[in-house]
Every structure is written in structure tokens, then in C-alpha cells.
Image: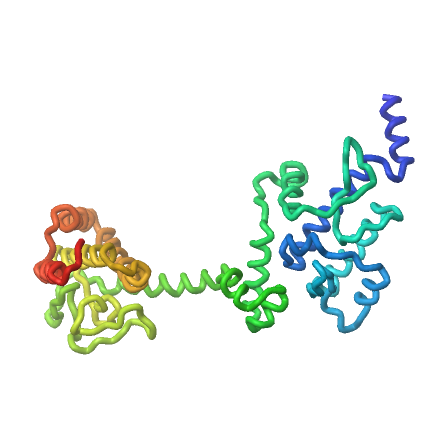
Length: 354
């Protein structure tokens, strides 16, 4: 115990003890990771940031119009906003730590690795480009929950780009902030935000759920039989939304499910029509030379068909059994309604091989 206490006292008396240097090296890497996130710079550019004298940095920091630190990377002058409050405070804190680590020595790069061979040697080298991943592996399970995933620099840059676009900034301004071209930003860094995705998917599924309202238990006297179900106002097509994937038309059948007048009865006849339509669409999609175009055109329709079938099947045990029966009748036995059987044969005569 006395020996341990003596070692403890000895370490406390040494301002540059090995353990202090170890923690300083860890802190320096943490600072580097933080500034990688703040600046949104690519690792290749970040590790090349040149160090400017404290006086030059401070001069830039105290300007009223200050909005960014200018770093030199490979001879190119770049600007990266770090913020007037937290960013500046973090930078000043890092510069103090950096000066303490170097202890009067100089190093040309803003961020660096402390050399270690058994113990810290006092020398420094440029950070490797994968420094953030190395740092994550060092702290994971010790200072960080092991279940917490690593956030790649690319994900950080993409998120920053998404936020800037979400703020309404022009593509040119976003590209300038990110220090790359507009074409690079559009092709590699444009992504829909989670909030926007939730809004768009919410609107989409709200539209799809409207399909449930077209289901009727029994046929009305004024309903007109069609190839996909029934219609309560034939020859008067009206889209259910301002923008639909397939425009409804009484001269074609694919757009019926996007019409306000479409009606589907929860009986064998209309289920057979829906499953037959689904079968033909699948055949056309699989045979289409342009798969992307076919998916764009029919994917939404397939979702609507499956949704309506699911709602009908979920109404009762009898409806569920009927749905299973008709699905097998069409998909396994190949028994389509006369209309869709004729349509399939017409496609085959045109040279479409299924």
C-alpha cells in the first residue's frame, strides 16, 4: 500500500507523467473527431489542415464578421464554419491542449498523433485518414456504450448537407459550405431528411388507406361492372389525388384504382378481378426491357391492390378463406378472369414472352 501511495504521489508531482500524456493524446483525438463533425471536412482534407500561429488564429476569431476558420489544406485555402459560441470555445481549448502537448516544439499540422514506442517519445506524426474509426474502437466499451455505433465521416457530411438543404439554402451555397462542387453535392450528398420521409410516407399511406373506403359488402343497383371491380359513375373519371401515378380513364383499366368512383365488392367476383390484374401486372413487370420504368409505373398500383385484398381478407374468417382460395386459383392454377386472360394472350401475340 505504501509503495502504491508513493507511486501515486510521484505521478502527481510529474506534470508530464506517462498517464497524463496518455490522457492528453486521447483528448487530442477526441477534439479532432469533434472538429471533423463540426467542419464536415473529408478525412483526407482534414488531416492536412495546416497550423497557423496563435496570433493569426486569434485575429480571425475576434473579428465581428467572423463566420469560419480558414484552414490551409494542401495549399488550398478553405473555409469551414465552426460557430461563434461552442465552436470557438472548443477551438481555444484545443489550442491550449495542443501547446501543452508540444511543450515548446512545433508541428506543421493542426491535428496530429503522439508517437509512442513503449512510452510516449515526444514526437508527433500526421493523423491517418481513418483516425476517427481508430478512436471509436479505442473508447468503445470503455468510455462509450459498446452498442453505440460509429458515425462515419461520410454520414456526417451527408447529414450536414441534408440540414443545409432543409434550411432552404441554394445548391451553390451548400456546395460552397461543404467545399465541393454542386454536381458532387447533388450526386453524392443529397438525401431526404427523416422528417421529410415521415411526412411523405405519412401522406402516401394516408392516400393508400383511402382504398379501404372503396370496399362494399354488396353490389349497389347503380354500380357498373369493370375489369378491376365496379364503378359508381362510369365515363366520368376523377383522380383521387391531385397527382397520381396512373391517370384514371374509362378507356383503360390500370388507372381505375386511382379514381374516386372505383368500387370493390368483398365477394368472389371482384377478388378474382383484382388477383387477375395483379397477375398480369407481375407478368408485364417481369418481361419489361426497362425494369426501372416498369417499377415506377406499376409498383404503387401493386401496393394498392395488395392493400385492398388485405382489407377484404381481414374482414372475417370467411373472407380470409375466400382470399386464400382466389389467390391460389389465379397464381397457382392460372385461372384468370376472361378479360385479363384475353389481355395476357394479346401481349403474347405482340411478342411479349412471360
